[in-house]
Amino acid sequence: MSLQLYDTLTGQKAPFSPADPDHARIYVCGPTVYDYAHLGHARCYIVYDVLTRHLRASGLRVTYVRNVTDIDDKIIKRAAERGEQPDELAARFTDAFGEDMARLGNATPDVEPRVSGHLPHIIALVQRLIASGNAYEVDGDVYFSVESFEGYGKLSHRDLSAHESGASGRTDAEQMARKRHPADFALWKSAERSEVGWDSPFGWGRPGWHIECSAMSMEHLGETLDLHGGGLDLVFPHHENELAQSEAATQKPFSRCWMHNGFVEVNKEKMGKSLGNFFTARELFRHIEPEAIRMFSMTVHYRAPLGFDVEDEGGPAGPRFPGLEEAERRLEYLYKTRQRLAELPEARVVPGGQAPDALVGFPAALARALDDDLNMPVALAALSELLSAVNELCDGALRKKGSAPQAAVDAALAGFEALRTHLGLGFQEPREVLERVRDRRAQARGVSREWVEQCIVDRATARANKDFEAADKIRVGLTEAGVELLDSPAGTTWQIV
Image: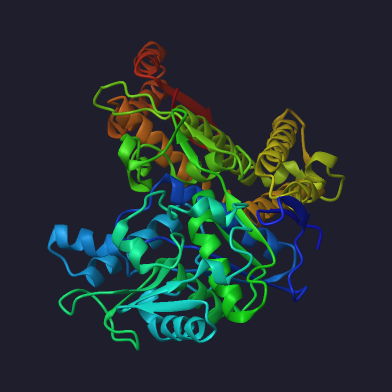
């Protein structure tokens, strides 16, 4: 196929070439489920959803595996704080994560393995590394020896000598005494019997974070993946350690391609809980259409930082998000255009004819953009041209004695289908989206939907009675409230301006 992707390992773009040309096997590191998904999660998983959609639309079979880390110290700590059992808390946030991803338009991965269901595979991989001399036991803990793996640092392009103080940048005397090298990392962590843990040949304990992903990915996709993805923050130490332990165990390349998406920056600072600029997807859903978040994430290249601006006006409506609001306006334009096309009178659509190049060429333009390292901003530019062409088509059909060739209508519909299959945009019913967006904006302005609809009824009654002065007065009152009426042969609708 013609897809080219930037490979973090080589630092270059190269053709994506699965071992089986007809089947792409992809693993993406999933969430640690101790809280709700945030904007960084949304961006990351939208990127890989678009990748898998594009591959499938291009004719490949895809097996997409995204794990759920449901065993982790953060989960145990959060559960203790809330007086819950760790497995119950993890299950609750796993369900919430799935709901949030669905609202963003992300398809469910083919396999969603959980750490809790793969303890035997994890333990077996740890034993394999001990047997090969790449790992060692210390009082119930098991560490990977980075010095035993010659290529350590090749993914993050770091030299092992830079890790004299360990991955955290700190030197702990007790840890130093237990490890052969400061950068050695835990494959298995011992625990007290009273703590959450599992039996193993090394004693009671829990798996380390890095070994979990290696075990799960190899169990479901084999010892060499076609693509391993995740956020840029995972390159080191997580993916570096995954690569080292996996290749040490198998003596094979762990992944044919390594793909990483960029950070989210809030008001030009990296998003993080410590900075107080942290937003969950659910918080944003209260202010913006979820699909607008999807479109917003596509406005910059996936490897670049995604700039997210917040304006806190201190009013009852809460903060404003200019970038998301602009994305929502673009999404609204998309759905209004789809609705216009769907509502063209049948009598105005004539058989045959020719379709403009802007309509016919959209699916190919979309595919070309995504083939170039998943260039979604260029894909959105092609979408803008498609929408302009569709509106021109509708304008021409609705003019006096105007018409639209069936070939052009079919090409427009094919364009919208390509948009859905490749980018996952435009997958909802237009009227439902437009009404939701309108009603939320009205509520933010203190405008009641019931009041507006009653005004529309009263205005229609006044016009029927030829009381045009009363009808105009009603329209003026609505305009002053920020409501624009849209009259058409099908009736009167309204929008917030």
